[in-house]
Image (cartoon, rainbow, N blue to C red; front, side, top):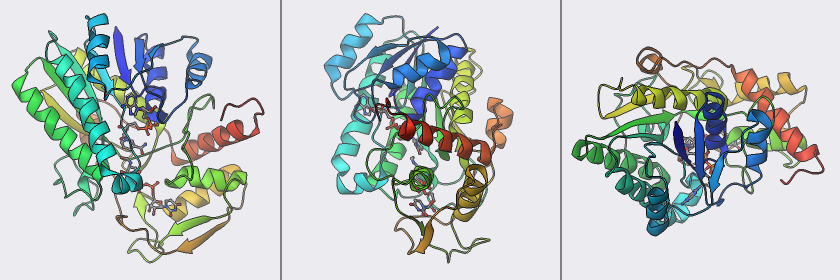
Length: 344
Ligand code: NAD
Ligand code: WQD
């Protein structure tokens, strides 16, 4: 019942660790803390009462990865989050992204090749679809040329895994293509910790509301959508976390029909940027200071998931609403800024 969660102290990984522990799994985390903090463990313990095992090292170090698996010979379940994820940074420093996101993946798979049976869950992204021609987006939608080195690492990552699964029938993988994860645990014990100026919409909204940023820029109000702003499928991180447990159980019970399966993980509902702002204003009671600005380069007009495959084959569906996600994001923001003892 022991599961390796790489990047388990990061935003999504920490929520998955909580769900796993609440389902009775023992967890071992590998994280080099390049985009997280060891104090996230305290938040996990606050929620679950259980301290996960934690090993701090860099997955780009092949020897470390090998030593780890020598010490954990019976480990066969891996959920792999560890990666660099900032789209803009990946354009400026592509080699960091190719090195981190691909080498870490390759070194892990090299160790799993020798296992009797290995179950591997991969963090992929709706970014692989680019601007899809048909909405909602099904898993069969064509993969478009990547808009960024980050997006390319997800496409190449999936291709690497597919080839490895073909060559090694003992490795079974589910690749989860997340749409836009937002929100925090309802306890406000764990949440998103963006470094520097947030690039994503919801942390920018909450940081503006708390007074850390002066004003939110809404990138573009002349898109061909119902109010002129872009449409995304915002999924509560707790719902997303639960999808990982269900996916792992599918592999453990050998219910998968292919060695490599793909599922879209979203709500199936598209919300515009303005709808997100209005909903945030409702749940927080704050008038958000925002203005319309030019379109952001590389943004697609609209993306939301067709969740039929996840619903019927995986047996998972999102349960929480946009307002729940925004309420939890706001509680988390208030907690980390108001609490004088906060390490953040
Ligand atoms: P995050 O940065 O919060 O978490 C990633 C964690 O991995 C961090 O704790 C970081 O310190 C760790 N890490 C990175 N490189 C490492 C390495 N070489 N060795 C050890 N640890 C390392 O990111 P997140 O938002 O939780 O994303 C998790 C995964 O989901 C990533 O693979 C990301 O690409 C993918 N994803 C994220 C989103 C999103 O919007 N957040 C959307 C789609 C896919
Ligand atoms: C959402 C909408 C912006 C900030 C990114 C990655 C994608 C995936 C999820 C990892 C867009 C608008 C944003 C702001 C704004 N990550 N916006 N003002 O771009 O859909 O996806 O995160 O795999 O790969 O590209 O998310 O939150 O950045 O933007 O108006 O200050 O909000 O233009 O329309 P995006 P986002």
